[in-house]
Image (cartoon, rainbow, N blue to C red; front, side, top):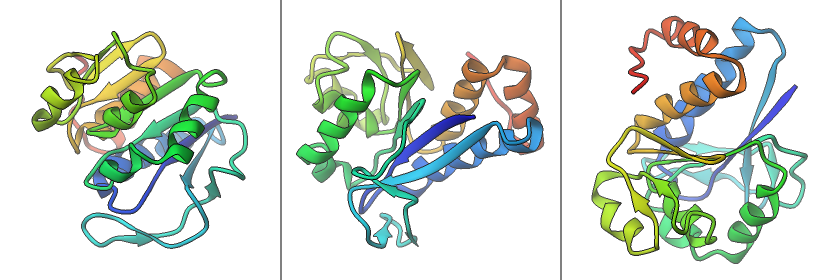
Length: 190
């Protein structure tokens, strides 16, 4: 069983985490009971996304079990999240056990705030390219960028592409393509 955590926080961009959540969870319909996908929050409370969606998490940072993959979404809430020591320490401490650390949209800025992206290739939301570059990151204008075991995705809907890319790495490209076909999504692998 592969354990995947998606870090969420107040004012997270909803599609940034719901897109990868749907794709990564969908693989269980193809390969039964192959992944757990959990929402991880800072503490136990209702989280309100940027567009108003309210939801609960499965675990807190303090109670989170072992993870193989951690996905960090973005949104307006990232401005506070990227300065939250508890969040940054969680990402840094979990990084050594992860097979993949991933981001969607401006979630890459949160990862960059930990120092883990310094001098690495990454992408983010198009209006945040300069900000990410100023953090010592080599910015690429691409839907998905992988440097080592860190996978970053461009803006908002790119979370679907990040999810499919992760499936191709965790399983194989055929499984990822099957998930894309089932959710009726045209996956551009380049």
